[in-house]
Image (cartoon, rainbow, N blue to C red; front, side, top):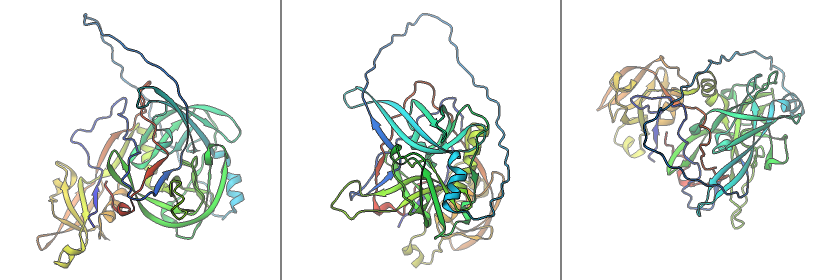
Length: 428
C-alpha cells in the first residue's frame, strides 16, 4: 500500500497576508459505497436575494492601502489540581459553564446565481478567561456572522481570530472578561477503555447535552477530502454519542480535563439498505493542536515544525527485496532543512534520535512533537549503506488571519463521502 505523507512543506518565501485566502471546501469525497464520514455540524437553510455591479473610472486618483497593527497576546498558564477522579455528573457541573453554543449564518450563490442564506449550529469551549473560544473550522467555514451563547444564556457576537483548515480548528474571540476556561489535559496519556464524556449541542437544539462513553481507539487514521486532495488526521475514536451540532465541543476525561475536540462521526447517510452504524465518533487530540491554537492567538499565524520532505511507506514487496522498513523519501523540499542536511530522494529514514521509524506516520508523529531549532539525528538507508545526518527542524509559517469583511466562502456540507479503501492512506 502506497502511503504518501506531505509533511508541512513550506514555500520558498512564506508570507502572512492581511486577509487569508479561503480554505478549500471540505465537501468532495470519493466513496464507492454509501458510507459517509459526517462532520458533526447541524445545518439549516433559507433564501435571500442580493446583487450589484460597479464601474471603475480610469482618471488619476489617490489610492489608500491599509496596514494592520496588533498587540501581541501572551498566554499565561495557570496550574490546576486535577488529581481526583470525578463522576460524569461532577465533570458536567465543573465544565458546563466553560462550554458554548455556536450559531453561524452565511450567504452563498446557488446554481442559478441566486444568493442563498444558510445557518449552522455547532459547539465550542472557552479557551481563556478573556474570551478566546475554540471550535472546529468546518463549524464556522464561510460564515458571515458568528454568535456564541454561554450556558447562562448570554449571547455574544464573535470575531474569527484565525484557523487551520488542515487540522479542522478555529479560534474565535468574544468581548468578555472573567470567563471560566476549561482545564487542558494531556491526550498522550489516554488509554483505550478510558471513560470520557462529551458536552455539546446535538442538532443545535438539545443544548449543553452530556454523552458518556469510552475511548474506542487511539491514533485512528481518518482520511478526509478537500477539492480532490486527501489529507489524514489522527483522531481519538470514541463511542460517546456524537451528532450534528456536537462539532467543536470538548471531550473530557474523568479528571475534568479536555483531551479532545469532537469533530466527526461515521454515518450510513440514511441508506436503510445498509447495516446501521452506531457509536463511532471521533475527536481531535488536544495535544495535536494546542501549539497551533496558541500560535494563532499569540502571533496571528500558524507555525508548524517541518523538515521539508514528502515520504511514503516502504512496501512489503520492496522489503522482500531487502529494503528496510521506514519512511521512504519521495520528495525533498528545495532549501529545506532535510536538503541542507544532505537527505536525498529515495533515502529511507529508519530512525530519528532513539525512535525507530517504520512508516511515514512514525516520522510525522516525531516531527509534530518537535520545536523549531531542535536538532535531530536521523538514521537512513541509502543504496545499501546506513548513514547518520543531523537535521535542524525548521518552521513553516502560514496565514491564519480571519477573512476580510464581505469575503465569503461557501459553507461546507455536514456530510462527506468516505471511501473505505482510502481509510488508511494519508496525504500531508
